[in-house]
Amino acid sequence: MEEKKATWKELPEADVLEGGSSLQFKTGNWRSSKPLHHMDKCIHCLLCWIACPDGAIVVKEGRFLAINEDYCKGCGICAHECPKKAIEMILENK
Image (cartoon, rainbow, N blue to C red; front, side, top):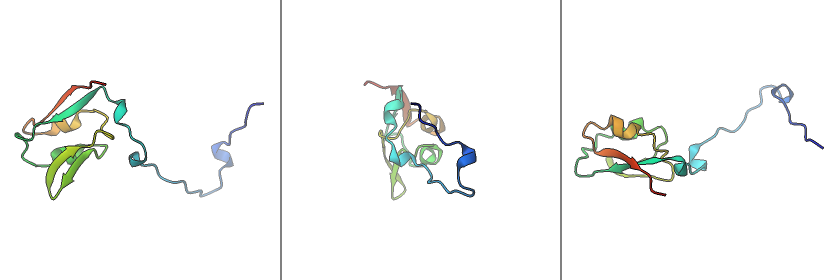
């Protein structure tokens, strides 16, 4: 027997649902390319950190530390925004 699923019309009025968070799900295995950081070129402007839609850039005391590959989806926005080309996108080797 097929289970009947509730529709939006059956939800209680003014129901509040829990918000989602990408921190609850490791999504790094979605990517086909990954960022490679060249520390010698980095000026710690943090434009990559500002632009990263997944919060995968790890910063401490105003300095770039690492890229959290558990959450990086490989979109390449960080590499595009870096004024010193300190981040390059390379093919993921899985």
